[in-house]
Amino acid sequence: MEKRIRSHEDLEVYRMAFKAAMNIFELSKNFPKEETYSLTDQIRKSSRSVCANSAEGFRKRRYKAAMIAKYSDAETEAAETQVWLDFALNCGYLKRESHQALKQEYDFIIGKLVRIINNPDNWTL
Image 1 (cartoon, rainbow, N blue to C red):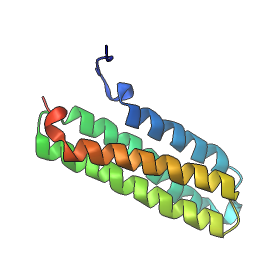
Image 2 (cartoon, rainbow, N blue to C red):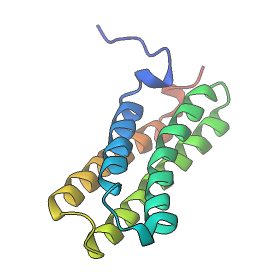
Image 3 (cartoon, rainbow, N blue to C red):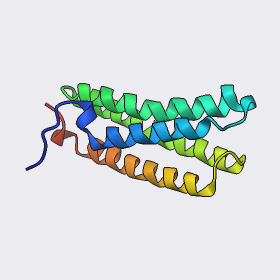
């Protein structure tokens, strides 16, 4: 029997995004100081926004269009995070293994978000 989803914290996509954002937070602590107000802030902000927009989308599920809009925002923030991961790799701030693992994790997150967006009737109240 499947566990009933009562809050955004019960969503697998939220839990995955939160874990990935915390991983990025830890890894970005080692980014150079000159990146504090650019790459470090940007990658932390976009990764956290995936979680925040997922939570908002869950709470807006009474209104299909509003819910889809928030999950769409979460999807775009996840893609933005992948771009910042590419910059971090190419600037030499991330090891290739960490980069690949996070990129793959965000591919899974994006896939889950797209499934919600493409099947809103399964989620709306």
